[in-house]
Amino acid sequence: MTEKITQKQIFAHIAEVMADDEMVVEFCEKKIAQIEARAAKPRSPRKPKPEVVEFRAKVAEFLEGADGPVCAADVRDAFDVSIQKASAALRFLVKDGKAETVESEKARDPKRYIAAGGETAAEQF
Figure 1 (cartoon, one colour):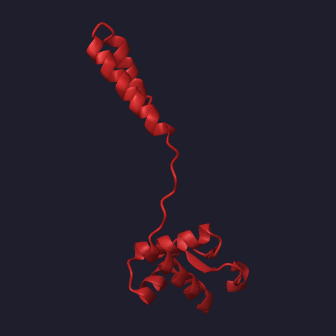
Figure 2 (figure 1 turned 90 degrees about the horizontal axis):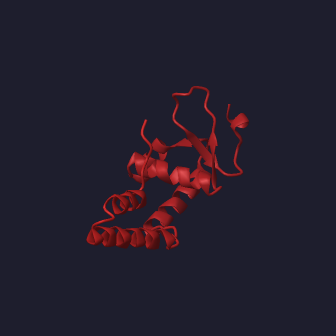
Figure 3 (figure 1 turned 120 degrees about the vertical axis):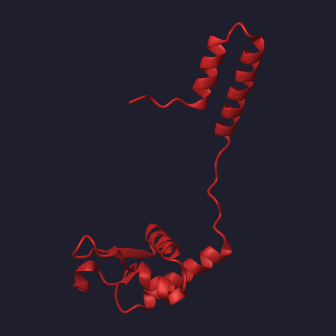
């Protein structure tokens, strides 16, 4: 298996091999400086769109009002959205601490979610 090489390493190698061509060395040094400048910039997380924040809040309310565990298909049907959007919202709520996953008996069963602080997995079965 080969080792991964970064762009910075590639340009450094080209500059080293082509050391006799000043134009190539200058170009490589410029590219390396650009790469370093890009890497030095702090990355801030993207701010979610207001619609996404609103949808996640609705899903959290839906979980709180549900009689039992809810899967992504239930959210999809309740809000008429794609299964991917429903699943993403549920995963975010778990990550954010507003929902919890419920362990199922079979590995093939879809993940089920409850509102955080709701019934525990043991109480479900």
